[in-house]
Image 1 (cartoon, rainbow, N blue to C red):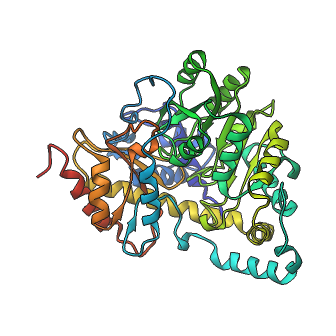
Image 2 (image 1 turned 30 degrees about the vertical axis):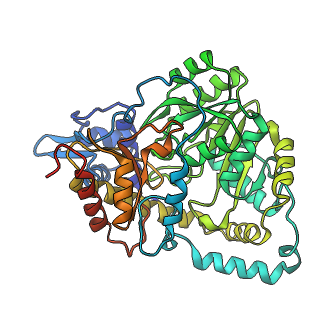
Image 3 (image 1 turned 180 degrees about the horizontal axis):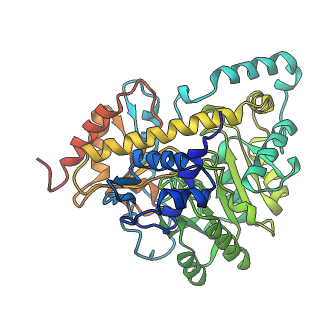
Length: 476
């Protein structure tokens, strides 16, 4: 089933709140006025407002109406991000990431660290049928190399899906990769050289930092708003000051903040970089996981010069182990194709053909609607538990898609120490410093909310919150 009408109205009201049309404490217009605004019935407006009340976005006041809820723990800005960076830097402190990912599959560990969907959130039965069908009907192909740019069947399916992201692409505009990480690394190699400066969001996904580090490049942190993404004025100042060779960002439900850049900001950032001849590498692995409304347009939708290298994968939707990703590299297509061949010769044939077959069957969008609802519930569930069990003064983001949550501990909090204690207690977390090239965000951590149903989320977060209280002045 598709999205209900009241859910679309709720998404419209929430968007107005996010854009600042209604601030915390403001009264919404009456239901009759909202009915005219959205062209729906009064009952639909009431249902939408009640849904937002359940999500703690609105509050109903007797004989007065609906008000935007005050949220003292909603994160106005990530800790430490208001300060301008001293300059580009080499990347350090990433050795903890290996410990984090190695603990992800350990059966005795509750993985709140690595961001990967559990098996129950994957269309396993449908994928099994696609794998079986490919083995049965394409035996000759699955034993052969799938040379770059890769399977035309999958590239065709991806091109069709990219239209929903505002991008008019053909199969020949796409090069298949082994996950998004390879797409990011190939893109960096195509546009920059060792020693070059790469602008990044701050904080940013540690995989982006590792891709930059692996190529001997430097990272320059750009101030990033937890709701709306990289700040154009901060990027412009950096472009005027430093020899930036490329920019990497996640404008749609970025990791770890979960931010969503408005269309106007995406267009502004693309134009700002294009005018200076700086390529943009866009990581959009969470783009199809919006909680409400249509899939947001990618930044590449505003690319008129072929300077946006769009990187995507099915790791966050169909399974990280498939390692099926792609890059739409614009004018760098020939260079990316050669680098892909020189690095790995080919992509794995069987999973590539199986994903193409699965998409051809037509059930992917129905699956996405179900999994989006699941992730929204889980993010809300984890956020509610953090509010109950973490120290007073803890703040957290409010993502509008994806399945990660960024948490800022109060003064005295130490995410690295918390990681050590939590792992000893059988819980993994992702500490804030691994999301910065220089180890910033010492009081921050990222939580994976897409947990298996077998995990007692409340108990795990109660235990984690008790450990976090040990570092704070309010600790008992």
